Structure formats: structure tokens, C-alpha cells
Length: 93
Image (cartoon, rainbow, N blue to C red):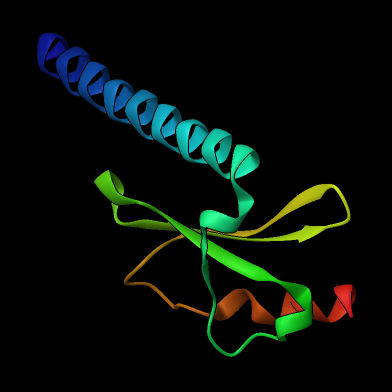
């Protein structure tokens, strides 16, 4: 029983590390090339809200560029409540 739980724990930890690594990779690319993200529909164009996909995990990173700062608005699974975060845009208007 203990061996099985250790194996499961190791597998989960490996998945978490791969996820964190992939998110960090996408964030680094986004910081270097913020224009590469696709515009997010139904957002004010003046806020320049963009999105990048973390493809291996079916996760979307939505962000905006304000002055020289990249603001992450949401990191979410693509099939769960897309757009739930859009109310957060009020503070940037």
C-alpha cells in the first residue's frame, strides 16, 4: 500500500512540475513577445487584453500590458467557465 501511494505521489508531483515548467515557459515567451498573444474577444480594445495557450495542459493565460507591466488576469482550464475573469477589467479602465 505504501509503495502504491509513493508511486502515485511521485506521478502527481511530476505532473505538477511539468505544469509549472510549461506555465513558466509561456510566461517567459509572453514577457519577451507580448504581442504574440491573440486578442481576447469581448474586451475593450484599449486595454490590449491578450491570451496565450499552455497547450500541453489545455490551459489559457489571459493578460494585459499596462505601461511596461504584464498583468496576468487569469490562468484557467479552457473548458471551464471561460470569461469568468472579465469583471476584473473594471479596475484597469
